[in-house]
Image 1 (cartoon, rainbow, N blue to C red):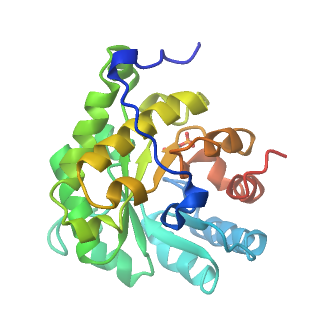
Image 2 (cartoon, rainbow, N blue to C red):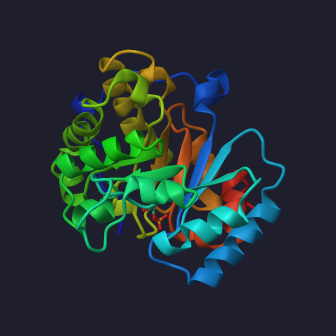
Length: 275
Ligand code: 13P
């Protein structure tokens, strides 16, 4: 199976941002989403292994997103290290009768400083709407958790030429309700659903095309956000393909799933080392 087709030429908007090396706000950010993997002792061991391998890191940001029950132990294992810890989602409310959910203040109290919102698995497997995602993002900001907002189209949406329409709806519905000063805490992640866990990484050019369009949408929203917001790419990122992606003007980092579960592989991804 080949890659899905490129976007229609007329749909592509052109603006591109300055390279991250030229804008300190956009220093590289590599994040590992552990999803529903690793028993508690395995999560703590992986955190310790990453701590060893990434202890000298100073020119980029790194974060891991363990399961809820592992957040506190992983945060402890990474104390005084450059690696930050986050949750994989948070509920819009701060507390209450929401069995099985987790709130932003609970995550923060366990040592999280970040949270993913709107991951495609939350949208498509658990039915989170754009409106839910917007409220979850606002809850994160209220409790000083830095949100990583995920957006991305399904294969069917790409093949029917609706990639930018879908991504624009996801970006605007989540970010327009947020005050300008709140936006500085947000990171975006473009994760085409067809590239997640499939081994089908978008080509650097396919990813750049959408990242540039997203940067155009952010510029339309005004303020510094268009230039300064980091946009990560996610979907089958590995050590062997990260440097090609990071060479693109509007790709500021990566949100890594499967390959973040292996300490050696993730450390190589963080350093953009193919071998
Ligand atoms: P994979 O890297 O396993 O494709 O997962 C990507 C992802 O969903 C990260 O949030």
